[in-house]
Image (cartoon, rainbow, N blue to C red; front, side):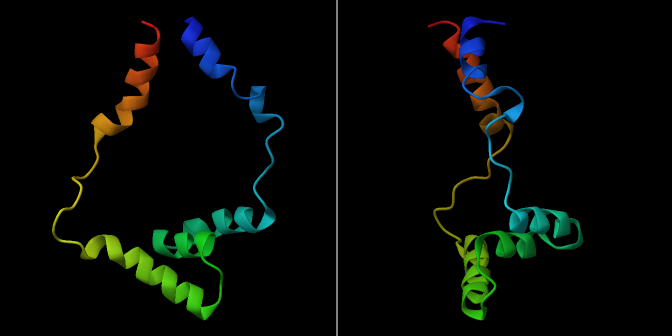
Length: 93
């Protein structure tokens, strides 16, 4: 392991010790996610169960598909590989 990897790795506690678990509400949402669509899961995670909040959440989830001009190109493997390349570039510093 390189020094950069050791430094990066040591930033978090071993085994996740000291990190708080997800709340019981979030754990329930994740447990139910297999039976729901991705949109339903996102609504449950990020919007309160009130009618107004759920309506705002549905509108929010529809917006990305409505934009036709000046859209960002879809991300692909190049984006997901960036952190790996950045970490390997740190070795040269």
